[in-house]
Image (cartoon, rainbow, N blue to C red; front, side, top):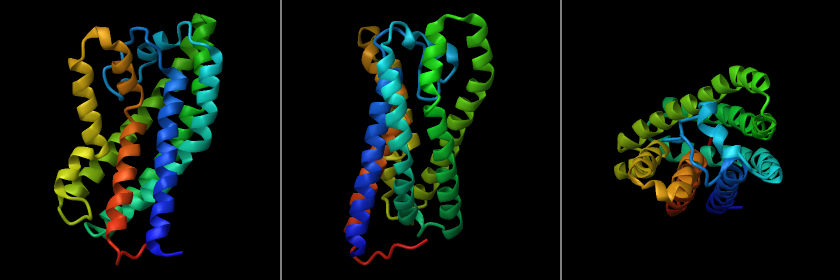
Length: 229
C-alpha cells in the first residue's frame, strides 16, 4: 500500500471517529432545554445538569458506547497531524503527538462516564450528585485544560509557517474553531438555544473532525511525503 493510500485510510478512519464523537456528544448530553454552557470548556456539573432533565435514558447510554468505541480513532488523526507539523519542529511535534494520544485515553474514559452521570442526575439524589461532582468535575477540567494546551501547541507549530499547513490554517485549528464557536454561542439569540447547545457540546470533537479531514487532504497533496515516527 502506498503512502498516499495509507494517509487516506488513516484520515478516513480518524475523521469517522471524530464525526461519531460528535454523534456521541449529541446523544450523551444534547437537549433543547436552556443550559449554562457558554463554551466547550464550560464543564461545571451545574452547567450540564439541566441537559439531562427529561432526557431519555437510551440516548445517553447509546452515546456512551459510541464514544467509547469511536473516539479512540482520534489517535490515528493525531498521528497524521504529527506528520503535518513535523517539519516545523521534530521535538515539539513529538511532544504534541505524545500529549494528544495520552489525552485521548483520558477523554475516552471521561466520555464513558457520562451515562453514569446522567443516571445520577436523573436520580435527584442530592448527596449522590454532590459526591459525584467532587471527583467528576476535576476530571472534566483536566481534559479540557489538556485539550487547550495541546491545541495551543498545535497553533504555535502552524504559525511558524514551516509545517505543511498554511499559516491561515490557524483558523481551522481546534483552538481557532473553539474560539469561533464561543463567539457564535455568545451572539446567537436564546431562540436558537438548541444550536448554541450543539456548538458547546460538540466543541471538542467537531473541530477535530474538521482538522482530520483537512489534514488528510493536505498530506495527500504531498506525493513525496514519507510517513515516519
